[in-house]
Each structure stands twice: as C-alpha cells, then as structure tokens.
Image (tube, rainbow, N blue to C red; front, side):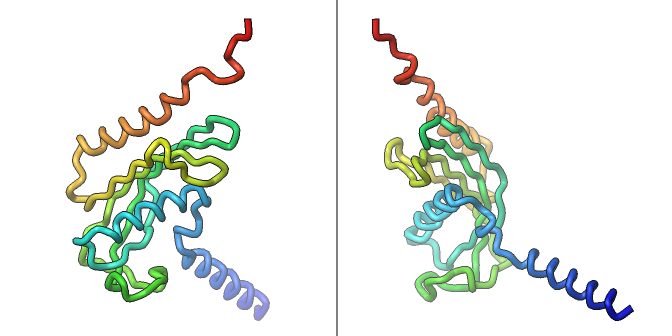
Length: 162
C-alpha cells in the first residue's frame, strides 16, 4: 500500500513538472530564433511598456530547400507580463497578466544552418489579437508564398552544361 502511495506521489510530481515547463523551451532552436526576433522588435516599440513572453504556437510551416536551408513560418501568441520594460533581463521570471490582450505574431524567414539570413528580409508582424484582420492574415500568407516560391528557381543540379 505504501509503495502505491509513493508511486502515485512520484507520478503526480512528474506530471506537475512537465506542465510547469516553459512552452518556449519546447521549440526547436530555429523557431526560437524567430520568436526572439519578434520579441526584439516588440521591445523596441515605444508604445510597449511591459515584457512579453511566448505563450503558444498557433501554426508552424517549414520548407526544406536542401543544403541546410530552411524557410520557416511561425504564427504564435505572446502574452504580456507584469514586469515593466527595462526592469529585468530575464522575462521568464515575470508573471503573466490577464488584463491585457494577447499579441498575435507571425514571422517568416530563411535560416541557413540554424541562423536567420538577412536576405531575404525576415518578415515580422505582431498585433493585438482582437485587432487582427483577415487582410493581415492574407498579407502574412503572401509573404510566405513569395519567400518559398523564390526557391523554385534553377538550381546547380538542373543547369545544363551542353
């Protein structure tokens, strides 16, 4: 009986620790770099007064162009925290606020060997979720299509030598 109780307590502790993991830590490094890019852009905006933290992924797309080249699209939500901007270097310790809307973000970029490339320019768009319009969603989709369509050009393997 005591062994069952210990087993039950251990299982509960394991489940609790799995739930307590930060969702950001569950992302691959390539997707983390896109979230970091959006957070960096958001934090430089004058109107933003508090830190934001990654909450959850809405959609992820990936196009493997070969030779270590990936094109990534990531739509996600950021949630405002109680920490004022500039008060901490580690926003993961900040508590979420429930009195402000989520920030809906989309990033689209090219990564080579896990690093974001400057060409083509990475696309970053964040807006408060209640203000997100269908036209904005279409613009995001257009950026993804333009970026991935460009990879359909001639490759070294397809060139003729004769």
